[in-house]
Image (cartoon, rainbow, N blue to C red; front, side, top):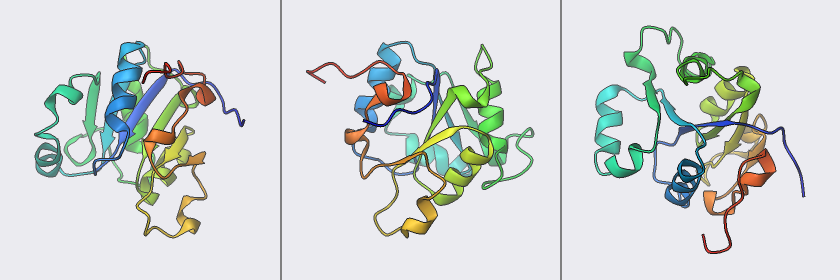
Length: 158
């Protein structure tokens, strides 16, 4: 079993609904792992995509919506949105302690450029060459094993 550097915080940028995301968010939240959202979507698009997921969104410490944030000077693949997001956690973790869950190639590049590990859950149509910067590539978050990154493992009943 591969092991990666332990992390303490998780940032999500998942534009679509990805299988297993709700289970993972609830698990991490229930185990006091600080969570945030960093997206390069426009605010209107973000609000539209998340309007039916308010209960799940309440698990997140904060959200950084790139285009509407003055601190985010450059969009992906620049690392700005992830670096700003990490700084907004109360304890301001260093980038190497942050794991990013991402679905887009430009987001993977941005997270890697920020010095963060990144789990990519790509659209099946994405060419494998765009996944090379990811720390780990999964078909679904149902296959994610938090303990590989030093996070609490799922209980057998989860």
